[in-house]
Length: 211
Image 1 (cartoon, rainbow, N blue to C red):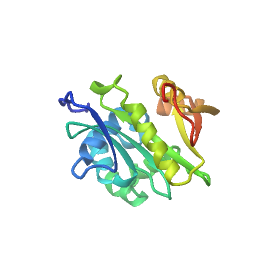
Image 2: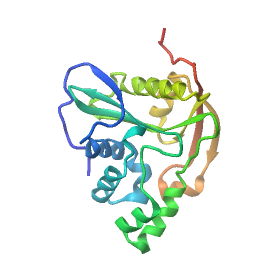
Image 3: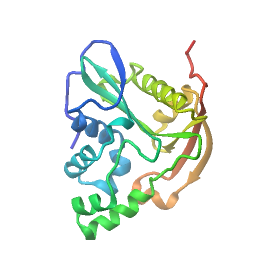
Image 4: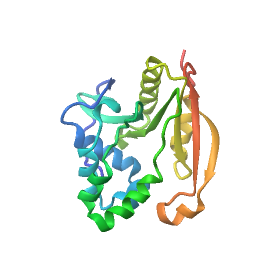
């Protein structure tokens, strides 16, 4: 199941906090297009995964990019014990069944990241393929940074996997620095990646090209 084709329009990109009402399905499609390769072993098949994600989004943990009123990108963040993507253990078991659900819960637990005091954890960025190269990712990162500053966080933390060099390059341009790489060769066959790099950006740090 791929991302549904849409006319992304030609208007300016606007950024807002919070997921617009009624955009849950579109947000889930964008999220799956960006992270389905990583989350697939836990949430496949796509026709079940996308509705599950859509049904368990925390709209107030999103920063969204819009063109002509259409959602073209989003970034999620974790703060105060809540992240963009939710879904309790019981919700997973209800959706996938107890036998298969238990296995999926173990896989999902591998992706759990909790912020330390003074940190905001960013869950990643999803941008419509037709909008890439227009600076949408940078706009989303800077809005997340503004949220972190307003919440008196000292830094933003994120994880990027080794098979996503494009994302890592974007984060580096926006002021993130790699602080640790964890080799996970035991996950390469299961999840498709073999290393996870933790990156941090101090609040107040500006990305390349900013005044």
